[in-house]
Length: 133
Image (cartoon, rainbow, N blue to C red; front, side, top):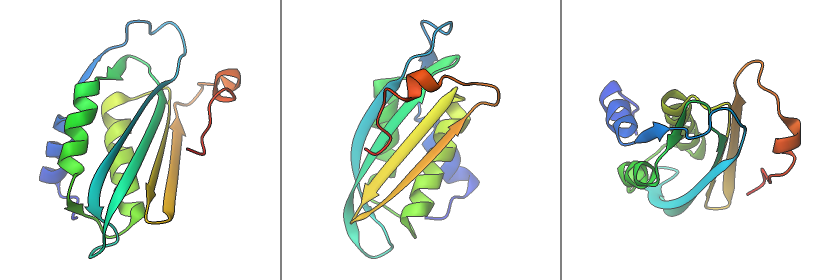
């Protein structure tokens, strides 16, 4: 899939967000989902997405996650990395979380992407979760 400006805008518009009810504390939010995609191009496969993040100002609604996955469903991608980095960029851009980890599993391959805000540290919280999926 060519990540043109229109594709990005459409995908990101489905990531419905809401205000974090407790922005004063750190906590982990998770979501999982599956889509069907051609990764790599030409080979249809089930793709598992595992999202974990520490919200800052905003949280992702469950409806937003479901609608977002629908925009990805049945889309061709040139590689697992292309899909993973597109989803990661969308989530980082729209949520602006304190910390985010995304794991994508497809056809015996996986990608794990992780980012955090500068100056945010909560190693005690992060040691309580599994990043391996």
